[in-house]
Length: 256
Image (cartoon, rainbow, N blue to C red; front, side):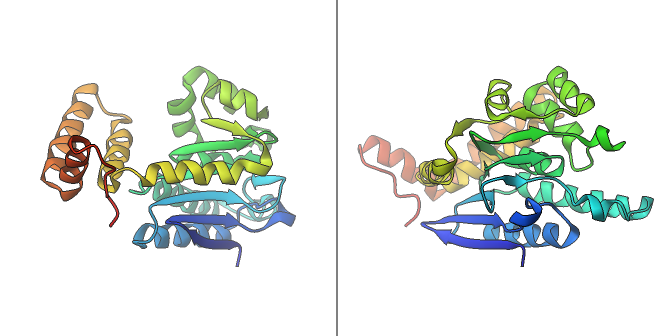
């Protein structure tokens, strides 16, 4: 087992547990991550998911290079598609996924963090898409998600430069949402998860859906999707409860 899962107060915490290998990815680890995320999505007791790495050095140091060295073209295609499947599972999750990046997030590790809805980083975190240094390109969504998050110019610099940036630079360019000391990173991630849990789960899911749908769409198409989702929520108990609670000046009870 390379993944440790636990649930604390409606927060599913998924920890990649290969610290001696800096939590590097191989097909077995990828499969476990995918299955764990899917189980958390299906579990009614889980409202928010946190993804982090074991140890103090790495979130995910990338794909296992020794595994990649053995791949031919078909094997590389299968490995790339497996990585992309996991990132799509994360990005399409109706439950928010927070990356608690506790150290190196390199290559595929950076790409997995990019698929998460929120990225919090420890002060010792490092980010890079170093594939060009191996004669490769990102294969798990780096060329697609990174420009959408930090802009085309900065993403191009990082991808074709292949260099590493620290947590403060990642924060400056908008790659991460916040930076915390390592010892309180997970605690702060759980705190924000609890903030999310105080909101309507359907409205959170619809917000994520609209945000994801807008990528690659025209503004008009995105607005059409948004207003349809907005109006449909008015037929739900959740929205009725939220509006009533506001009028009655009490806290909404979204999760009885």
